[in-house]
Length: 121
Image (cartoon, rainbow, N blue to C red; front, top):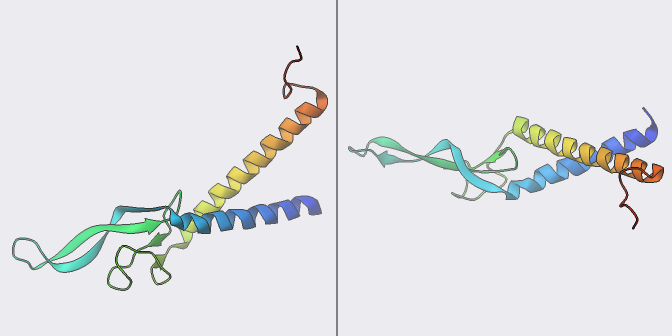
């Protein structure tokens, strides 16, 4: 591999990692359920379940840890899952690589006077 391509790949991987980490701001509830108490059911002796808050896009990789952290708020003490985070980094890397290749092809077409130009009137 050429040193320039290696440098571009490293920069794209770093940008994808930052984008994935910043995507923790995209928060939603569910589908995973967590225990938030033990006074539920008709006899008040069953566990109380409700959907957990998770953060990350497209896959949630930080999950609220009920009983450990502040409820309904993501912070450093919540559960971090590596595989969904790596999948998010891979998705953002693929998106960056695809957009880079599209831009490169478009520039090449314009340089040759191909379809990338508007017809002159």
